[in-house]
Image 1 (cartoon, rainbow, N blue to C red):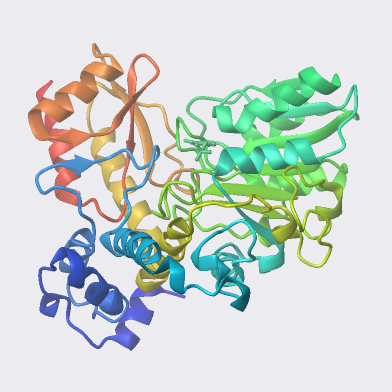
Image 2 (image 1 turned 135 degrees about the vertical axis):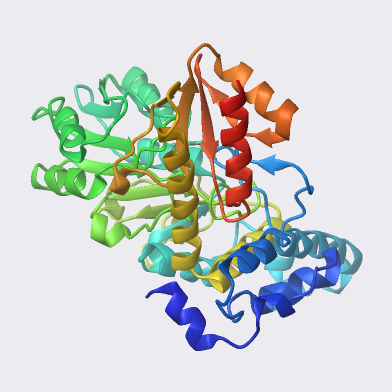
Length: 425
Ligand SMILES: Cc1ncc(COP(=O)(O)O)c(C=O)c1O
């Protein structure tokens, strides 16, 4: 639903009436009002959102593609839980169903999984909570019964968390590992579909590709790829590390067999918040990799795939809180803002002669990540100049480019400063 309309309908509290918030009490107060503030002044609204983060004034974080900064509300939930637990440990009656206060990996965390299910359009039983994207890839690669001669297909633009397990399987089981060569910049979805299927043969067992490419931010035409793969009986697994909280993800519409993500990136969850979705039609093809009591649970496959033993329950508090934070702003409003800022940056860069944009500029194929270079400068030099001149922090990638991520805690003025520095070089 159009977020602006939802907002106006709810419209109870004016943005301007929300105070500058103190770290401890203010974050909770603001969370309660993020969804009900009236849409009168968008600029004020996003300023108020920015104040939900303990990020330092006068500095700008543009490296969300590496890790998202957690909102204060999320951090407080975690810190409170750790302190409370370690103070009141003796009061917990473990036999009384209160175990989640002490441990993690023996419990279903149904509520968190349901919230994630609403975001990615899946039943909670098809979702496992994992530490991160890397775990998701490894659970599937290790869980599939792969055989000698099976072909495993990646692109040549994978993160290590998108290729490592497939290369390992190729070496260990005698599978054939292949990569499809992606165009740079990638501006035509059909070209990507074509390069992927140019590598497919009747031995291809798995297509494992990113939904958003780490280095360039390309939003891949995954629906077309998964549908074509399905016709050929090929297992599809999407690396969505950069996606949930960045663009809309609807795993059923995409039609993939598996999907994993790191919610500590764009959903701004605490580090160590990952998910793995497996299509119910294919879940019995995936063996458990990490096994404990419920390794063979056939009623709740997501739970079967999260048998990780003791972990940190404060992290789960933070994970849950980050989902509430996301929902209180609303998926559409959040995602549209990222796209709006991404477009604002790309529009500014496109007006500059010496800039080369290596990312897609096709509207459906780009969102919050833009990778670009400036003639005569290395990526590290650009990063250094942006920090030294204006305290802006994107990330150098490769030799001659920087990757610039924008998120809801950023704003147009920070992007203008970036363009000014670029112009001055
Ligand atoms: C596309 C992609 N896949 C996988 C990963 C690995 O994520 P994690 O370290 O959270 O497992 C990243 C991290 O940047 C990524 O961008």
